[in-house]
Amino acid sequence: MSTSIAACEANFDGLVGPTHNYGGLSYGNVASSSNSARPSNPKQAAQQGLQKMKALHDMGMIQGVLAPQSRPDLHTLRRLGFTGSDCQVIEQAAKKDSALLASCYSASSMWTANAATVSPSADCSDGRLHFTPANLVNRFHRSIEHETTGRILQATFANEDRFAHHQALPSSDHFGDEGAANHTRFCQNYGKAGVEFFVYGQHAFNGQATKPAKYPARQSLEASQAVARLHGLKDEQVVFAQQNPAVIDAGVFHNDVIAVGNGNVSFYHQHAFLNSQQVNDQLQQAMSNMGNGQMYFIEVPADQVSVQDAVNSYLFNSQLISLPQLNDTTMSNGRMGIVVPQECRENANVSAYLDQLIAGDNAIAEILVFDLKQSMSNGGGPACLRLRVVLNEAEQAAVNPACIINNSLFERLMGWTEKHYRDTLSEADLADPQLLIESHSALDELTQILRLGNVYDFQR
Image (tube, helix red, strand yellow):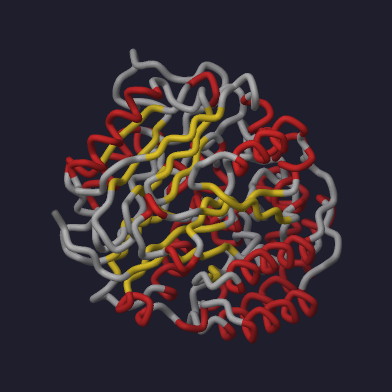
């Protein structure tokens, strides 16, 4: 049985970038597709995210911020044959291939649940905290993120004695990797070796295996297995489970749209997995193997909350959090809060279920509702916006302190968005070279605020 080291779970949220727009680029993501080409409000989007970060900070949690990508991605546009000055590249792309320009303007890096898979040091064979950026190969507009993502993560978690950074997996559908959106860690307390739960949509090398018929399965078993190897995880502490292909075809593009976990609690929809009972048995066995005791499973019945209700409200794309005073205590005695978007209260079935949930005798005791309309309209809820990072005391001290939210940083970033962000952004605005100039100015200042160094191509 492994020993426990004092640790807590921090949330690092993606800061919404100054070019936040609704491109409708994500096939299989119902919210993204249905809001395509609507005007967005970048300033409101960034401030909604910052207000969520500040609220969790005020609760006593460690809350970090991750910088957005620089958009448009001029490096990619040049690789695809557009030439001249930065402004000329944008003008050419707007005239010849506006869809490609929109892809290179994607705001999707705000959803840092897709940034990487993170394994705490207590789980890893070398005793360091491991990061593997997701290659996101299934969608072109996301596949161009991982190099900059890696640089931002390395600037945020820079101590090589404490943090290990890997390259993204090979850029092939066979190793399609969507990061923490398909990964959950279970444990009795955060500082103890836990169980890492990888959910996949397909066996890439087995053409006869069950897979979705309508929408693509973005995560492969082979990718999940590779990340587990890279992070030095033991076989007995890892569980691989297949997402139900039927729910992928219903718009559940990531596991975090249909299931969420924290500590020793698994909160999931009845139809989330291909074989839920087998999955639960494997998780319980792995928890026992690691000396983590009893798992608690909360299955949401389909006759109370349909898959469509889950997709429309993002009930499961929530943050299941341990209250700060419970971060390093035995989870079986703890009470948790669930961070949900306001859409959960606007859906009668989901709202009724949540009231029933917290009235019952279980670990989830409090509902925390946030207005994240701008993110929700683009296809991402509270869980999409954050990357979970378990940190022991030494690792907390090694994190770039300029990236940790406090009252001063919150006010400074709110002022930064007021200075640099537009109130509305339409599809036609993407052809405006002035938007590029505004974005570069904003991000150059941001790297100074967060002390990241030169992480963007335009700075190098």
